[in-house]
Length: 75
Image (cartoon, rainbow, N blue to C red):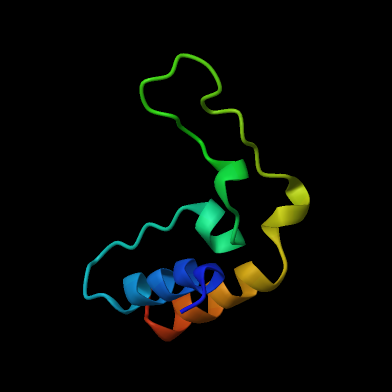
């Protein structure tokens, strides 16, 4: 499986789970890489600097998330 498809497959597996709660990092929903990392363990600087822009709150990734949420009864 290509590396750029891994996050999408893990999201699908999490949504299919029988677990009551499914938490998915927004960076995975958007398909972002290391540039969107939030935390660097054991470092004092550079943590919590990534911010999501208003434009990123819509579009295909969130349409897919909405469909999966409805399909697996998580709405």
